[in-house]
Figure 1: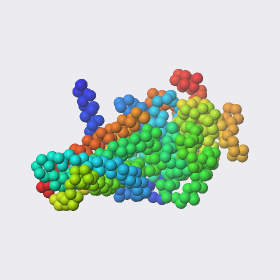
Figure 2: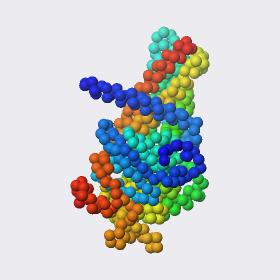
Figure 3: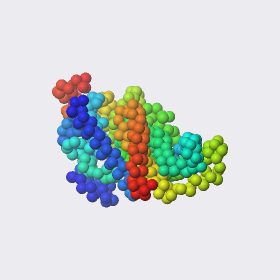
Figure 4: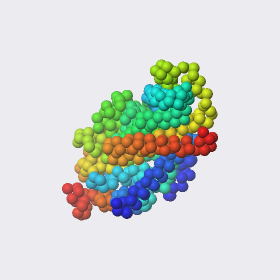
Length: 281
Length: 259
C-alpha cells in the first residue's frame, strides 16, 4: 500500500490504483511551526465512502491537517497516504495528478478574485483545454448543485460570504473527485447560511457517496451531518428518525496537537473524557 | 545583540537565498515543460511592457535632456561642446538607459508582482491553485520572468532612443548646437561592445526584477501588513541588486572588450 509513483503514470484512475487502500491514512504524523508542535503523532483513517468530521478548538491545527492530506504541506515526521499513494513522499509534479481525484474547499473559499464564477468553477477544465461548450455545461451543472446557476458571470467580490462558499464547493466537485476536504466550510457564516452549506455537504455525501474529511469547530454542523440525510425523492435534507445516526459519518477530535478521539457519534456523546465532555457541553 | 539572534538571522538569510534560488531555477526549468502558458506570457508582456511605456519614455527623454544640459556647459569649458551628442549617447546606451529603465520598471512591476502574488498567498489562492492541479511557479512566476526579460530589452532600446532625442531637443533647440553635428557625434564613436553592453544589462535586470518580485510575493506571510512589507522589500532589494549587478557587468564587459 505504499506509493510507488509509477501508477500515476498509467491510465488507471488514481483512486483505483490501490482499490483496497483507504481514502486517507495518517500514520504518526507530526509537524511543527517555529519550534511549536502543531500536530503530534496523529494517526487515523478515512475509509472509502466515509465522512469524517474533525472537531477541535480554533487554532489546534485542523486546517494544517487538511493541507497535509492534500500534499500542500509536508509533515516533519510520519506518513500520509491518499488512495494508497504516499503524498508525504511524492514530488509536486505527481501530486498534481493525484489531486485530480481530490477536491478541496478552503476556509475563506480562496476563489480567484480576478476570475468570474464560471472561470473559477471551471478552472481545472480550462487548464486542461476542455472545449468551451463542455466547460459551460459542466460549470452549469456544478452551480446548479449549489443553486447558484445565475452567478456565472459575476466576480467573487459581487457575492456574499455564503455564496462564495457555495461556489467553492461547486469548484471542488466539478471533476467529481473521490475525496473532498472541507476546511471549516461554515466558519464565519450566520446560522441560516451555515445550514445551507451543511445541507450541500450532506447532499454531496448522499448523492455521490464521496469520501470526505470535514473540519469544523461548530458542533451543531457536526451533529447535523450525523443526524440528517438527503432525500433523493423530495430533493431535501431531512432529519433521520430519533436516535438514528448516519453510519458513514464519524468523528475525530484534536486537542493540543494530539488526536484525543477517533470514533462514532455514539461513542463521542457517551465519552467519559473530561475534555470531550467539557467541549461538547 | 545575543549570539542566538545573530545565528537565527544568518540562518534566515541563507534560507531566503536558498528559497530564491530554488524558485528561480524551478521557474526557468518549467520553461521547457508542458503545459506552456504562452497566453500568460503575452498578458504579462502587455502589462509590463506596454504598461511601462509612458514612464520609460518620459524618464528617458528628460534624462537625455538633462544630460545634454549639464554636460554641454562643462564640455564648453574645454572647447568640446561639439561632442555633447557623444556623451549623451554613451551615457544613455551603456548606463542610464538600462539602469533607469530597470529602476522604473522595478518600481512599477516588482511591486506589482509582489503585491499581486502576496495577496494571492494570504488569501490561500496559491494553495487553491496547487489543489486544483496547477503549478503556481509555472503559471504565475515563469510567464512574469520571460515577459519582463523580453519587454525590458525593448523598453531599454526605446529609452536609449528617446534619451538621445531628449538630448537633441536640449542641445539643438535650447543650446543652439548644430543638429547634424549632434547626431553625427551620437553614432560616430559608438562601437559594437558599447551597444552589446547596453543590451546585455536589461536581460539580467529583467530577471532580477521578476524573480525578486515573485519571490517576495510567494513568500508573503501575515495578512495585508505582510503584503505591504513584501511590496516594499521587493522594490528596495531589486533596485539595489540592479545597481550592484550593473557595476559587476560593466566591470566584466570593460575587462573583456577594453571599453
